Amino acid sequence: MFKMLVKGASAKPKSPPSPISLVGQTAIITGSNTGIGLASARVLLGLGLSHLVMAVRSTEKGAAAALPLRKDFPAIKIDVWALDMLSYNSIQDFVGKCAALPRLDIAILNAGITLNDSIVNKSTGHEEVFQVNYLSTALLAILLLPLLKSRSTSPGRLTIVGSGLGLHSKFTNRNAVPLIPSFDDPANPGWKGMTLAGERYCVSKTLVLMLVFTLSELVAVEDVIINAVEPGFTSGTSLNRSAAAIQKVMVKLMHKLYARTPEQAALTYVDAVAIKGKESHGCFLMDWEIIG
Image 1 (spheres, rainbow, N blue to C red):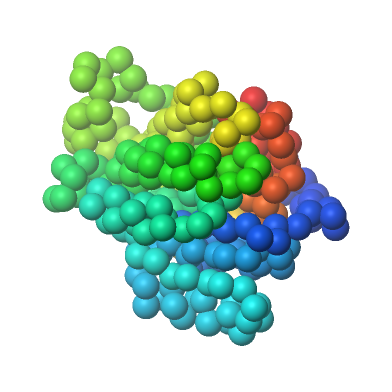
Image 2: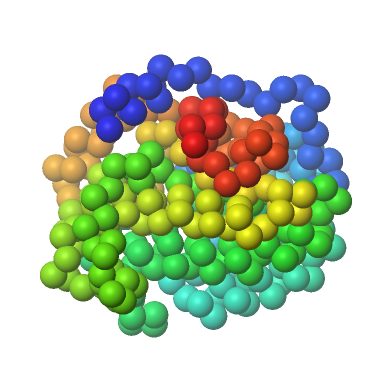
């Protein structure tokens, strides 16, 4: 993981080439009121995107984040829609609104969480990191795929934000039968220490990579190009907001040594949805490269 951080820190950010244009296209970005999601929204708008849907848990915070974007891009339609990744009903309602869109070309599933201690969500009965990073992300991806297929004039684009940490998980409960309830069992390793390098977070990102690969085998590349992207170790995000005080100090120090800015990390998203093509279907992208 240390080597991964060093490699990421030395990778030169790649801006989109000048011929890239998203004029006429519609994009959804989840978790786009802050951090990399918000930064990627600004980059896509700068490429001529015609309609942006900011999918956020708090529409009040989303509206505040949208204000400067609307000021800088007054001719572009920017919507703020509610999406709570801890609620299946919210996800289904959100997709219902998306079904009314005349076009849908890009979906960036950026929303994700870490927690210092595990919490079982009362609504779903599942541990919340597993719920948000995998179960809800999988549901949202599957429900959006038919819209991305039918509402885009070229192959739709579905990018799910992954992590290189998904390559390092131990996945100690992988042989559990049944598997899903084992993620909610506090007796399993990884129940504690849910911050960025915690086992449960790592496993949730392993599952994202498995999801992307499986979906790519079920969905034709001519219909929707599906990939996962690692934005790199990035400062200015809220991912570690629940970390313990000492962990926050360590992360802050690492940010100074290795971190990308949200604006630099956003370029990895744009690369995944607008520059990489059919060759990236089912693949994992890190540092602007297809690694598998």
